[in-house]
Length: 221
Image 1 (tube, helix red, strand yellow):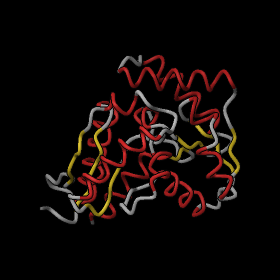
Image 2: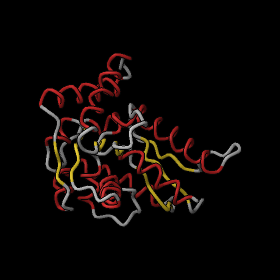
Image 3: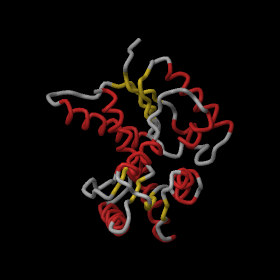
Image 4: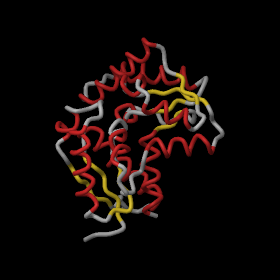
């Protein structure tokens, strides 16, 4: 059995492929030559999970607990779950697995920069539920939400990315929307589909997915 490795839980094809691409890109940038990120992918049927999201439930608990127990057999040093909302379920399980938790990583990043106010971009559920905002507030970080119209637009972007149907005009509008808010406060991207469209040229954008990826590569070094 391989040890000292990274395991990626394979969920939706678009976001899982995104994580794989970014992990390889960051690893190669750090190590050069023809290096690619050494990792294992534990792929599951995302339909089983997605049909239960975004709400927590005992059924979803059981599914995720089963996945994580299977993954422990790989003796992973770190696990990436490429779905921000699913971490609410992970938190309910209180497992000992070394999960690269996007909320923990984001708060650490914000504290490093003495940032105490952010704008949250995510799914409509993530922006309006207490899960992410309450964690930030518990760490003395205020959460500002986009306007109702912008939240509806952001959620539309998320759905289009998931379906692979986003247009160049939609991407341009999304980037303009991010820029407007990032000019006032740091914008936290709390949805993997939105991370796919992260412009990556604005230092006032904090991407939860990218923090997971960077942390994983650091652990492999």
